[in-house]
Length: 394
Image (cartoon, helix red, strand yellow):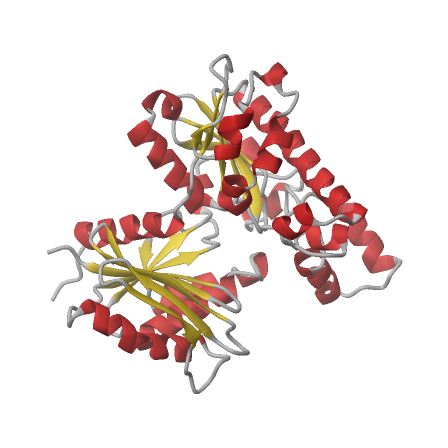
């Protein structure tokens, strides 16, 4: 009998969850509004159950309280079967963790050290782990890392032009969104072998955004670096920035590290540029010229990094759009791909508007695909493989 695996993706104010019976997604949903008014959205395809209501917890600020309130509902769907393992998305694994791993007290301490490198994600990932340990004390807890996919990329894409002592202490380019890129690679391997073996650029465009150059399933280059701030502009994150700007903000504006961190992580990107919203849908529907300028900058940066990733690979055979914006915005895909014939890219407008599978023209030298990503499924696979390969002794 296949193990029951719960997958958790914990953020600052939400917990996304998927409950799997083998490869079958039995329950999926999200608890939002943590810290204020927690709200539960849940769908159970097998039983037909749907929930969209406030979640009754004694402490809305607690990941643990939210999971405890969710437990009775999950138990009803499980029908008495225990959860064998809980797989967690952990954004940063540092230099040490490049494979999924069972979580121990030692591992937790190692991951806490990395919190300053991913302040928007890592603390909340670890809070979700602690909550799951309390809610499912008999289950294995497994960490799956967003940085792991990039750990074998070439040294030139791993380092900065700083004294080597900084590299030795871990100041290097890690890359992120690895679980998403890994899922896309597995999809291509199963469904498009020729594409998988060739030169692939994946654009993971969402509230967090990055691009990756991949050859035969191996990360060769990534737009993200030491932290999840680098590269493309995002919902509230700035993307690539001259480091001299940071020095200016400190010395001339007198900003503290905490103030600069808040600016770069939470007040920049699409939200900062537009002054309106971090949501691409809202910006696309707005008549405000600032919204149009924010979109224009976003597209410009994606196009610039597309050229950079093609240079890293010495060409491109396949371009994949994924993530919330990449999968759903025909406008952004069209604007990114316009006048890219020099790269061999031609997009069919009708196929692009349909937004599913291949959207390139028959004459396009580069295959352009829209593939929905599934980080939760990737975590499930890793967790099940770890249980199978190294079961815990009775």
